[in-house]
Length: 306
Image 1 (cartoon, rainbow, N blue to C red):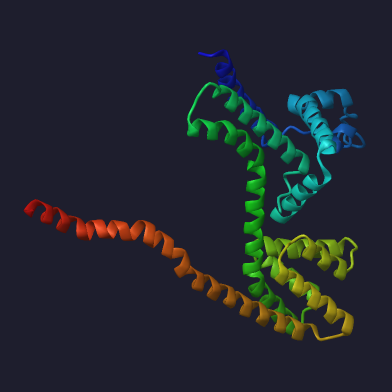
Image 2 (tube, helix red, strand yellow):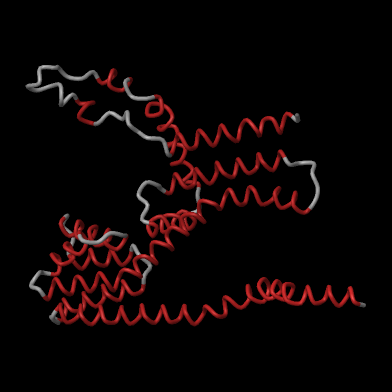
């Protein structure tokens, strides 16, 4: 076997395993700050203060050596990354609602997958043909842009879920306000009784209000975290109602009816687009097969008689 190919066969699984262990492995051995400071053993516990050196050495090799090196390397890569590119990744992560991944981790994964793709391309050197050229060029490109595709797909699905559940959530908030609850209390009850990204956003907004932000700032932050025009319209209507003293229940009722009407229009639009989308598979796949089944036996019979 070619030494370069042998190196690629060994390096690709090793790099993939190291990547999964570094970024996705469970972190069960991390010592908390209380353990390092000896708060559990000191005081009246009678166990004495914890030795910082022993506490540090009791952590895994991943926490002592691998993760600090990885984090410092990723921080340097973040500084070398173009500002617009890093901001785009950060925006997509925010839209996807994923809190486990950071811009640094995404950049690191992109570079690792690019390196694996280049190793795969080097192992294909010396071949020929269109398929070989596509693999040679496409593997590194696909590896580099694969995290972007996955994050963008997750963000798109999350925004669609928010848009789909918005009318029902507004109906529940409206019912709560009309029943005598305050707007914040109605949002809290609705967030607790629902699941999905919109309920999470409502709960996060209420947490920001509890942390000291005004309701207007928290609602604007929720609108900024999600690229859903209907959600921004709802936030704008609530802020205007507070500014001009319009009854909240009336505004919510109008917004809920408007969102239901828009959802019905989106469903009708998809239904009208369906015949056009079905036309190409029908002409290219179904009709030729149907003609073969119907006309084929007759053509064979005519040929045999001639």
